[in-house]
Length: 202
Image 1 (tube, rainbow, N blue to C red):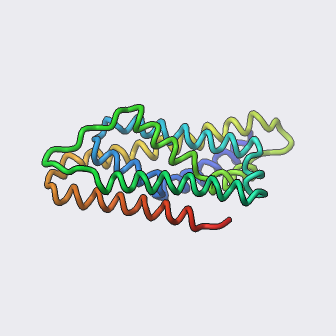
Image 2 (cartoon, rainbow, N blue to C red):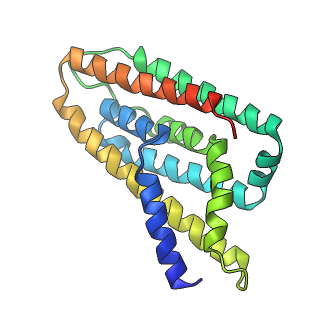
């Protein structure tokens, strides 16, 4: 793969993953409740979700979604419903003086994976984004593997950084009123993100 193209891809991907979206809001919300120990499972879930979305995109699913409004709409509703469900759970989470116990690592990873992977807009985006950095005169599979690995690594590092920051903040947030406000803010953002996903159209 051309090094210049790869560096350009790195810069573009780094800027993309740093924009806080539904996945990062989920990471922050769970890290506030669970502490920094959830950082690795959450980052792994984000990386796995992005890998699934990019792999499906490059395998042709993105083109199918772009051509099939029914399938695209169905996946929008599935992703939207899951975000709303997570948001409602965060809104209703019990608040105590002590920090909430951390989520089991498997559950934290699973939630981050599902929110990241079930984003049909992201799948379609990857179809348009990734091919711009592939040289048609070279082997497709090798270049695609490099780009997928690069993007997933950047996404994982970004999620890990957000989780660590939020985990440190969780130690200072002890007042029940403050924790309740943070839970409701995060829950409202996730519910809003779910509704936005449902209302958006390709």
